[in-house]
Picture 1 (cartoon, rainbow, N blue to C red):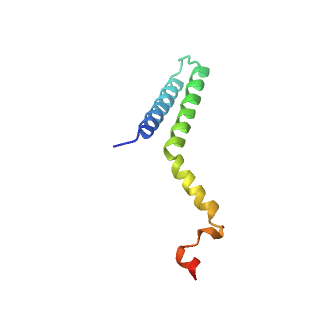
Picture 2: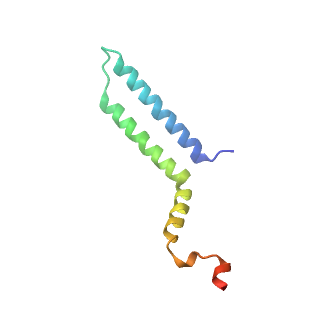
Picture 3: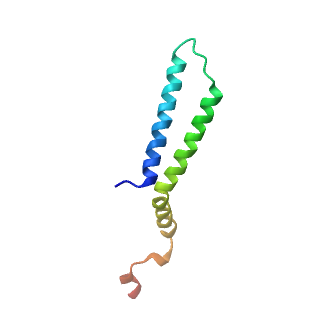
Amino acid sequence: MYSQGRVYLLISILAYYITLGILTHSGIRKGSDIDLTTFKDIIDALQWSMGLFAGYVFGGKGLEALKVIVNKGSTNDKPKDEESI
């Protein structure tokens, strides 16, 4: 029903926001000592994974849109009816 890339993208987005929630909760509580470098490494890795999965899932659509934009100014994209006139 859903592609594997979309499922992985959803999981990485959920993990990203859960991690940010934990970091926010720990930051609000006074007296909690948190290792920010570990959280920064985790958040950076999750951002890269979200970018990777988003590129995989939506990459084909982005390439098709780019082809349409690039070929818009070309004279080769005329419909068949106009070429015969």
